[in-house]
Amino acid sequence: MATRRYAFSWDFVGNVREGRPNLGNSARIEVYRLFQYTMRDVVELRYGTEASEEIMRECGELAGRKFCERFIGPCENFDDFVATVQQVLLDFGIGILRVETANYETSHFTLTVAEDLDCSGLPDMEHTVCHYDEGFLAGVLFSHAGVEFNVREIDCWCTGDRTCRFEARPRQKPQHTEKTPD
Image 1 (cartoon, one colour):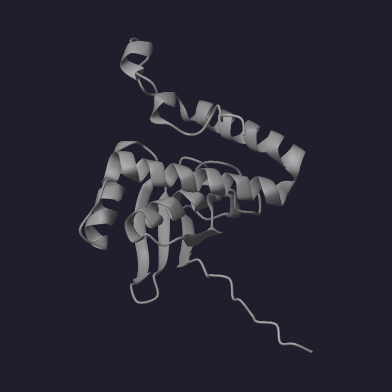
Image 2 (cartoon, one colour):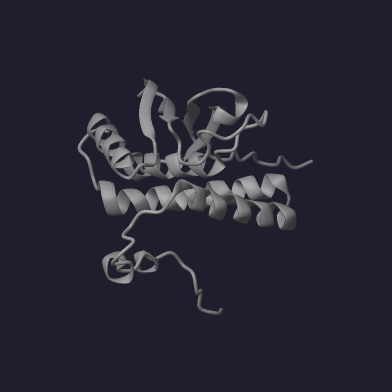
């Protein structure tokens, strides 16, 4: 098997202070969206809409896990974890996270992200667009709980709402049915 060239590593972030001594570590949101939506366009053309959305979720999930490893770390309980994630997302300008509802018995959560990096300010499109965020939140939740989550956006700036709302539930393990002999 060939060596992978792009397996994620923080080395891809590099030494920003050295590499961008004048411009620093920030860029305009238009550049981020240009990158994301041109990449999505190419992936959708090549693989179709459904596959492109799933690829964005997978990318987001990896990013959420790596983000937590690097910037959040272990937290003693869920409330401390959420508070830390909220502050770091705010510090990075990613969005304003809120836990709207939390059922600790079923691990079902409703989360909102206001001023979302991916879509706040976009025109109405009559469909959600934050598939990367779905994955990112799933990765963040996994980092604390050690359980894989399905996260789906139920309200989006692009559907006329002014905050993005996500439902998070633990992934169901496949049910195995035994075949009975004829």
